[in-house]
Image (tube, rainbow, N blue to C red; front, side, top):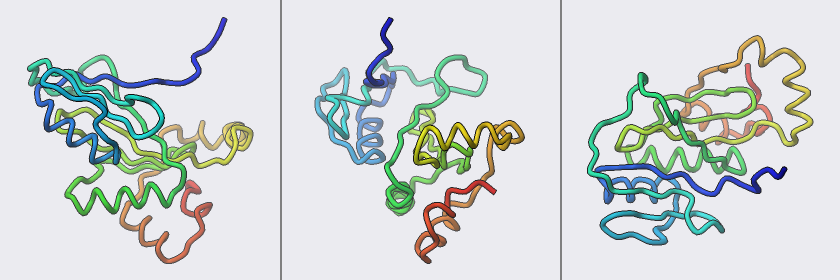
Length: 171
């Protein structure tokens, strides 16, 4: 048996291909690798496409009552990268609908123009061993969802020089 080497891409169906293409390219600071009237491939790293959009003409937005994919998460390398992205998107009128420190991650959730949810996050632990130790401490079991935070407050704390370790420590 062999496990996959990596997650290659996510494919979303949309009735608004140009709008969705622009949104994902902007939010992920990616580029369009290919686009025509039927589909778009977007990338931001060495993968030829991380997000694919397929034009279906559909207009129904997902709701909490739908089954299927809940959200897609994208991990940034540092809290600085995540907060820089937050600052940039906020300046463009794109605001997260939920900001939470889950414990394993510090996460900001956004809704794309079709109503799909994406998570922009950072890992709060430097190693898998440190995360495993935290899991074994009982902290996650006591609160498996996490603690909400104000992204503007987190940004202010970062800009005032608070350490990244303190910024991601779950209260």
